[in-house]
Length: 260
Length: 263
Image (cartoon, rainbow over all chains, first blue to last red; front, side, top):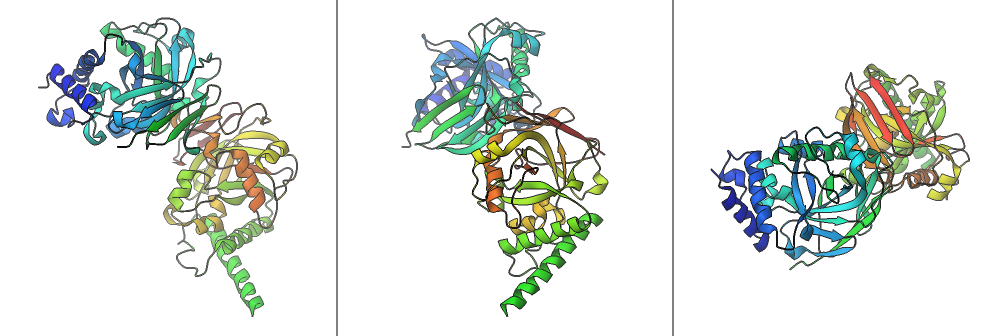
């Protein structure tokens, strides 16, 4: 059986050294999602420096194709630390990551606390200060992204960084229909709309609040939730300029350097 | 000599168009033209397409507009082409009772699109902004594509000869003037029985649906795009196979919705 501390330390080392590890589920096929969240908690403790704090959450596996790929019927989540968040226009050094990919998402920002269980999408709507255009950089500390559900959960839901636009836009529109076009060096790579995230980004946040409830965790005012990819994530290369244009929310971009 | 060649080709075009026409009506499948017609090229493929449209018009159908195909980078890459193609819409393709009957089709798929109703003729040098200027309104559309080729497998030239896989078309009720927002960024959500099966933004069609319509206006051979034409600008999501019992819907931000049942 996997010791949560040991597994978290292995993931932590992989992240620091940028040498990925064998999938936890390959070493221990009996690893459950619940075990994996315990590993994730240990990993967050290791990662969190004195100045660091949890500023939000990311949801993963929110699209049906991703859920089918991993053989699950639920999303997963991981906390986002302040050290993982960047402003629009950031340049990121690829050498600091292992095998990153990017995906555009709608981030929802909370004005009021959300305490599960029983949180509804309408309550989420009532709790928001607004929506923000975002790009998530995902990365896996597991070799070749060969992940099963417990592997990605333990590994911070495969998150690496979140880039957020500075504009918090009041959600007085149907966020399910909010369109998005993501481009690499000016060429369209993919398009999507809010409904790609669990059918409705508001439902995605409600799911998170309710899933965190048994652990006594409350979504706090000022927290944001990365509600899930609106298209298939793609790999990037040094020199790439990635831009996501959202209808109603504006744009957010990042540049990649490195390549040693 | 060259006249004889042209005549032979015109005859051959009519014969191949008739074969496709008959196949559609009988709901059969045939082998691709590219596998058995030596010398088939782009011009010839569009001649066969036009001969097929002429057959439908001769049977009393009416031309109501145009359609775009291969407008997404993903589809162009999959087909090994670097430009879209076009086909023509006739009145009998329009569904008025929001019911699509599988027994009228071969192996249909559905894809959501943005449709343009033109209020003025488009010139052969037109741009995306000319298209927006000429547009009375844009519609949410669900295009039911169908192919007369076996297993829906074909080369790009086959697809052109087969009228860009045109099948049937369901259009939403409302027409919205495309001003004050960017058609490239409007979100589209296709659902089947309430479940999301695909999302996209307008840019999935040639980076801008209005540019897709402009491309057709610049590219047509026999007839331009005219006032009163309905032009559908290309699939926004991956196509989905139709099965009996499905309720298919598309919602497009700022424009509206369209839906149909599969019977």
